Length: 493
Image (cartoon, rainbow, N blue to C red; front, side, top):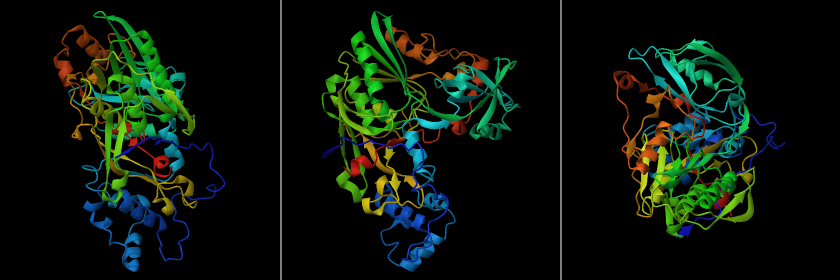
């Protein structure tokens, strides 16, 4: 069985090269001499036919579909946009396959995988705080350091009842939340009684977020040293920062670890294996996770093992070819993981992959439920669509389809509905009392610390408490946020 090693390298372009400077991303390039009128659709079909996890289950991806060139060309021409065509090929779109997508700018995609994106630098939750559904508010979950939101003075726990002066309710929520896609937005910060404190007008800029957001050691929790880490994304260019956090924990001699993945939608599979290695030295170099591909790529199926060293990547996600010894903890007998519905893919892989080795206690709310992963497919037939460097220069389309499923050492992978918490703590019910990360009384962290103390966690109950409900947050999620991926470095080394 193949064991994956150097896998995740992403090249970030500060500006488009001359090769791409004149391309029109939404238009097909000049049709080739083969007579194909929709060459982008041809790339989409052939890439999906080769790699898609559910290829055998999609009739239009049958291997015989392109046997009759004229019929095949007519089929490709039947779709007006590459997006429409791609979506037509997804297996049970929205249910079984909730995750595959296509982009018209893979440079933006690659940047996002390293935490570089145009953003306000803010993460929000939406809460209906009235029984009559006539008052929906946002509370601030997270603010990225030095982001537009941070510079404007917005902080975790702030309450927002309006965007661009429009107060939110059930009837207008969708349109108001849609304003978050605008480049400039005014956020109305209010008290819990909706009294205006201030309006903050901010403009999105390109920011780079360090996912190793916060670390702390509590020196006496029932006589134990407890490490606490807020980790917001599995980004390979920050492997050294992650390892440095565990050097801190190791030097402090922590005996318990609370890993806060509430905002972590996933990322690099390789980095997930490194984090697992940091958490549990006793796992040695055993199997952490297994990947299975479709029948056309069984030779790619293999495993990730726990490691003693990691690969270092520069700020552009390029492998420096320098290794660093992993700081592995040897005193942790149980892992506490703080979760939410935003906890997905590579984060869930941590829970699933470590469970055969140490007890993992999940605290918070149910995770997202993504046990599958993707690769980026480019219009590069010579590399079976995996190599960016040979991509067709006439357009920037790329696909991120699901191509593999993740299992742990015991071949367990049944968490498509998410991991149910061992201790349920619904943060949104405390919308008017959201404390900073690392505050010992912050409601979800407190539940973990109380469990270490031997105390049972209970949510306070009241009529008002029970009336509060979390509203749809899909419009608030960051683009490309819930990913678990490997890329062309593995397939082309």
